[in-house]
Length: 586
Image 1 (tube, rainbow, N blue to C red):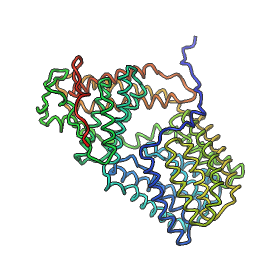
Image 2 (tube, one colour):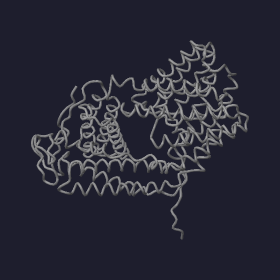
Image 3 (cartoon, rainbow, N blue to C red):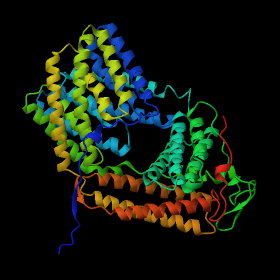
Image 4 (cartoon, one colour):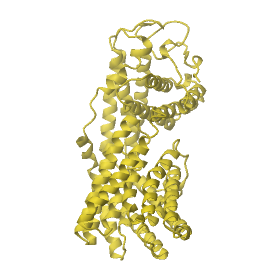
């Protein structure tokens, strides 16, 4: 009898891939930013009568789509790197276009660039829109006739527009300097409230719990990325995230209404709610599980007041930890690089074999498909095809207006840019309905093209790119998904053991407890993400789902024990005062 682990085939969704979701809280920010970044350079070129150069300025302007979820200190760096990455890919593409007109060579260069852009964006977690915009810019530039002498001027135009896009992205900082951190904190509070509602109803939702832990983890990462200089607002936000963590540890006792009230107040522009120290809630002193007395006004062993150093000392400790080096994150992405390079190259070659003039459309379609697993890649393929097919119909309707003149063309491009970013958060296919006419209109910047020919080419290249790209994804699947789950399980076990040991020890420092708690929470979030990604692989050996669930449950119990050990919750058998204290400040 064979003892081999059985394999399974996962069903691939169709209609489910097209289901609309809720729009992002800040959907209007990238939508308005890209319009503000694209409009001035494009309108200036209209005035100068050189709209044929708008493709280069638009390459830089599209960088304004990035980093809207980052604190401004981090956003400045990320946007600068995005602009430099865009210029690097554009430089390679323009140089290749100036040296050869061999379409096979150009497709090969485009595929290699797409693989590099995909891997770098995944490794640095830049996105959305991640590598797709960079690949679109570099792939399109490969098929624009160039001379070597023109390359510096075209790069200068892109760099100038990229600098303007950087300014657009940073423009809200003086008006709302803590906007990204406030949004991340509000999302953590809302997610904790949603989980608390399920727990209070007696039917705990594991999905809501995982989402809440992920939101809290994301909030901490956002706050940690905001810079090293502390501020009153930052400390107030950190305490609110601590409140969300407390709610996760004692969900049945948490007050969802209060959590949501804090979230609403944080999202606004008013003063951040001052929640105080969770350990000071209640009418009298409490004791930790180890018996230590917790007076509201008493100092901790480290000499700092309860409200200042004790609960937030882990933030400073975590900021002091050196980030994981980039090279260590590139190794696991080797299959992604191979999949991207192979799929994009084959899509471009097939498009050329069918006589296409713009094989980069097929190449970009293939590049846009690749997600964390085969199921998500299939869903993206369905979304891309449906969105593009509807999009060419929109292009046919818009073309008569766009061909009224250069100004009308630019206004149509701006409208498509806004629509794409406003809608893509609800579902990728809905955003693609505007992205498709945008890409087609960009081809008309040097001069108007036959509408029927553009539509036919786009439909064919979309189908080719989606089909060939998905076949490549199946051929180069995540064969090591099971190993990654095993490593994530091991990481959770080690983090849980360390946190449990510290929580049980009488002499654990606040910094050590905070660091252990956050390390365990991060490991749990990573385990869930890894398990979900592995579960979406189409053909693989069965995953240890029961072990994953048991590891998550044990980790959550340890997290609750660690929170109690810190004095953030009363010990078992005592009455919680969490739901009866402190409201939100206006």
